[in-house]
Image (cartoon, rainbow, N blue to C red):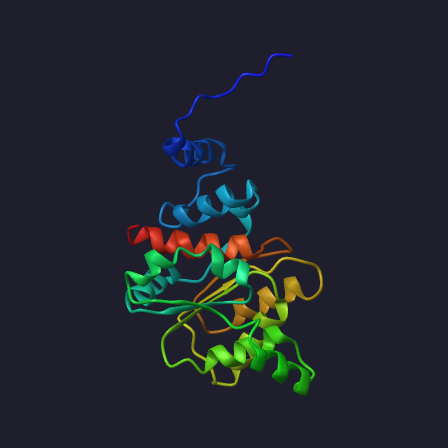
Length: 209
């Protein structure tokens, strides 16, 4: 069997990938939100995200304003933090943080009988700066963010809720969608740290690389 390969220069692979995505989308999508939706599809090769990604009213403008204002991005995994373009974020005075591996977070989780993800969000809430949360793995982190918002202890500029899995994953996303906070959520079980990072990078690239 002869296999035909498409000849694409290395520097053109991403552009060609986005062109293919545009051609194969199952239906038209909002042009304003297209950079985010297409980048998530590019990261996952999963066109379901054209239907499952949900955006709160005016979230794009609010998110971009937050980044311009030097917001910090807090992730629940080192993988998500690693995937964020820190150079692009630093152009606007922002930083990326992940506290999941910090010894004080582990100790607090042990003493309180909660998860490290919960205590990492507690630590993040103490940062004295605008915050964007990008949650791709731990529904407990997303639920705790919702609880802190409800208690008036947290006012994030954006919550990216895309944890993947089966236990309390769907519910955690629905909680965030009922909170009075800007959000980008992948409804259902799908998501992941790579998706969280992809959404962050899509927002950053909308402001220029």
